[in-house]
Picture 1 (cartoon, helix red, strand yellow):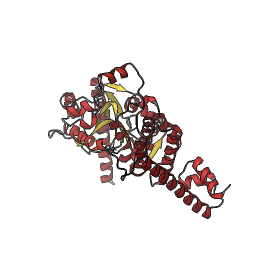
Picture 2 (tube, one colour):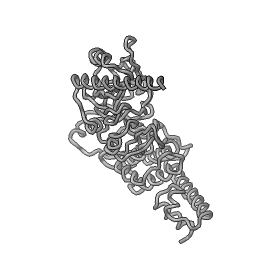
Picture 3 (tube, helix red, strand yellow):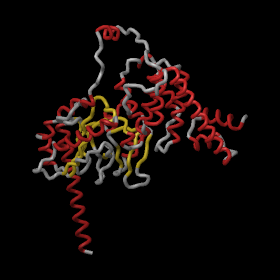
Picture 4 (cartoon, helix red, strand yellow):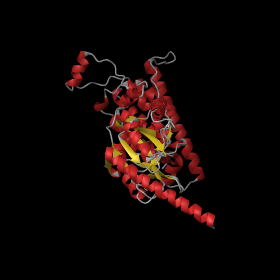
Length: 419
């Protein structure tokens, strides 16, 4: 019993010391930076993405990963918890998976076991060399948050470079003379304690503003990393094109329908889950540039949504994404370059088109006929099979089972049942 009491007293003494150090670190940070409210911090971090569904992690409960309608909901929960974490990224569908990565809003360096003495030296030496936008006093350690002036779109080909940058940034703070530990895990999907939540000792995690946001290209240059994938690769404009652009002279779409058709087929078979939403938007842009009728483009995008929802993806594509995608069918996007479209789609364009020796008209006629017949036949078979097993299935059950839109369900049920 005496041993147990001594151990408990020792733990209490350690807790008192850690609370005192936390308060001392807060005093130091407030001297060098500006205390910022959790709402202001996350508004600065997420910007417009804060209005979308944001994921958060509760480590001591199941399910561990949850989704909220906005960051305010997370902050209300966080006020009373010490096990709640969120991310410095946003995701398609609000699910924290690297393949669903939408935007990277900041690099966060997690430093654990930082004493007040360590923090003073850090601020005067290492931090001074490359000031973060915010420093968060998260408990035993601190988070150095380097926010971006413009969120970095998480294209697949960029991820390797972004991870390299995180590792290089963490390396700046690995100094042997310090007792703290720098987390150099080069991952883009890492949860961090929510600002405004409780620490393990019951204190509130606080954020302090230190520096300004940076462009990703500037950050990479400071870390001596190649910026090629993050710089715009625009074709050189002639003086006439520049003049027309500056004078807002309309640029007419000059694309060819066969390019739209081939892109549509590639979207059907090659687009992964992380590019579904942007690929639909890109296809609408291409449809306008290739003078494809709006009705056809919208019908094709609706078919793609149905196709995506039939695959084994974590998140269904909602029907309102069709309307969002069709915003790309506009004169406003006629100048979007092939490089940008490739990033949206997640694949590179073929620079030459093979027609197996056929003339353009013959090739397109065959391709369109095959596409239409394949879609119709496949859906008829699927609908017929399902109705044979579930003759009394409701519209809702059919939507959930087949993954199609309501309009498509109604169309093919009438076709199969003949009513």
